[in-house]
Length: 153
Image (cartoon, rainbow, N blue to C red; front, side, top):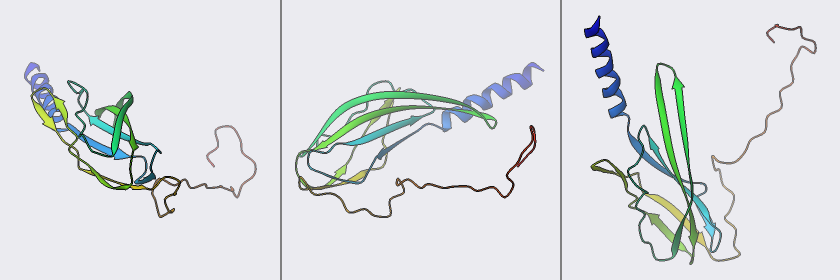
């Protein structure tokens, strides 16, 4: 019995060690000079050793906007996420590549994929496109108008 428990524990540790990753995203891909966008750096299944190391990019200013943490149990496993939020304020127009972003975990440096940001001159608004971040509203109309307690509709 103790061998089974020990083996299960080793498998659990191995599964958690392999699931560590870093991702980064912007709340929108285009903005204008002076309008900040939020850069979210998400660490999955580990807590970083320090703040993320951000690149120094001429024309962009980075400022910390806080952190959040989420822990989720279910579906035979657990997932934890630690998210750094950073405000990116453009100082001049242009196309920018936000890279390299580096996050330290113990002795390793993890890097998410580079991000692209289009900055338009002040006062110009980005053209609305087929962005996945746009909201969609749905109205459901049931065919049955009465229900009883415990009844599945």
